[in-house]
Length: 45
Image (cartoon, one colour):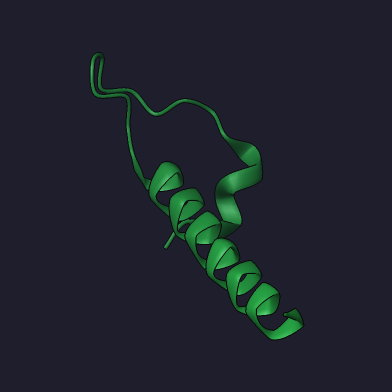
């Protein structure tokens, strides 16, 4: 059971990292501005 739990945790971590990367690179789709996100600078490519 612990092995399955570990796999699920790693998968969730990868999904969270990818969503943070996408959020840091995206802009607001309605007014096309980049909101200030100083904590996400290290995730930008």
